[in-house]
Image 1: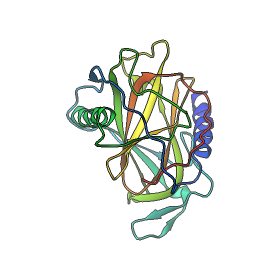
Image 2: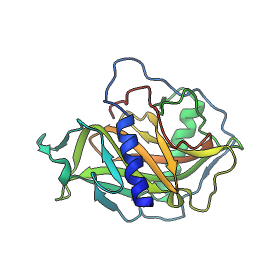
Image 3: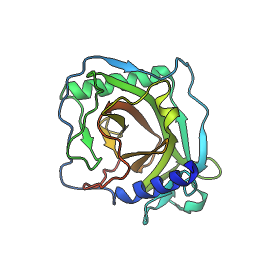
Amino acid sequence: MKKKMAIVLSAVLACSMGMTAVAAPSPTIQQETVQNVTVSTPSVTITGTPQISAIVGATSAVLDGTAFRNAAGQAVDASSVQIVKVPADLAATQISAGEIAEAMTTQTTDIYNFTGLSSLALTDNEGNLNVLTQMYVSLQDEAGNVVSHNGSISTTFEAADILGENTLGEGETIQAMYQRADGSWVVIPVVIRDGVVAISLPAFSAPVKVVFLLAKGTSLEDVQVTVKSPQT
């Protein structure tokens, strides 16, 4: 059942993000008061084992029209593209938590809202920035060479792997955000259903870090995105 659900959620999210790149200003997140910053990532000193799977398969999906290219600019067929997901270590996750907290409370870095929601929170019910985990996400061909894409892809995770020992309280959900090359952060669509968490990522040409937060909000079982996704 979870395998089928992952396929459905990935397909929904891949289609939700639309095409990349917009000239109009992007919606930004308003500043929040952060009471405390907590990081729930296990105390490990090395990154986790890479999870590698086909980009078109049981746990991932691709928006129609998305093109893949290698470092030489040559087209790569989607059937030979793999998505790589690597859990970050505690130190790296703590650095990201500090960067997000600073962006939330100062004007130094922008946080963009591309969830399709008119408003959202990044803190939990106690007003804390509660970082659950961080993943590095990248694409590669069958030989392990880096691959870029220009559209939208989605992939899924087990909710238990994201939450760890945490539980969603009443009125709480999981938010996800990735960091762009310019240092800004983008909050991306998340759908949670039957123990599966699906996210959607816009164009990127190098590995990106995706941070998952425990935050106030309602867990979505569908998503209607009204803004186009930015280029990384």
